[in-house]
Length: 269
Image 1: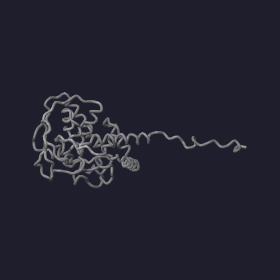
Image 2: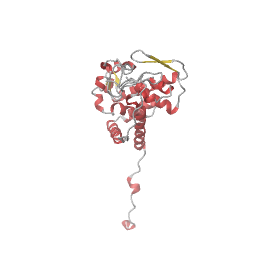
Image 3: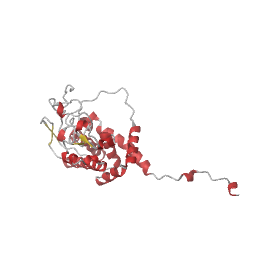
Image 4: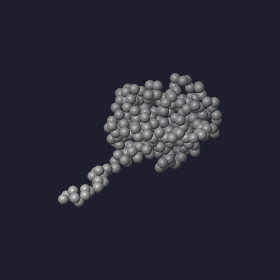
């Protein structure tokens, strides 16, 4: 069920990646965590059972698989057809993000598949396009806000912004505590952060909470505690593609007649 744990410095043992965990706690950090608490799909709104673990390095791959960016393009076109693009733009502006970033997170969480406005994901725990976890946001889910695309996107942006502000509030603080589901507490001092580092840690925190900042402050890969150990990297790669698609959509198109050859002079004779 689990990999054999192996120590990594002064931090928790690494166990097999599982997601997501209830109420912001880390399920997989505890080798005795019951299976009933463990999920098996990408996590929701900053809740992740691998949060506290210090992931052991993955063995190098013989050859990396090509990124299936055509699936991102298909998801973008689906968003266009369903009228979701303005929802991402409005939520991004309200929370000081770029719309392509929210689309990247939505794609990672649900593939931006409209079926998740009708059915739950993650074994009944994740709801909506941004996969809000009912264990962390019970009232929001029970109010059936997750069935509305605009509400889902807005909620995701709000939670992402809250992660960013939480990280910023701890910069320079000493002896910050993070805790596993088993109750084990680990401490760290909040490292200075800004720019792209803050962006990446914020994205990772959407998946694993304050453990992302823990890893950053300890000098580790910020994705070490995320689902698949690649959450922010993957989201930001998809974000770059969504930006290309949004830019192409916003570029004014010249009328076709500009590129037509003028008719021969004899035409007017």
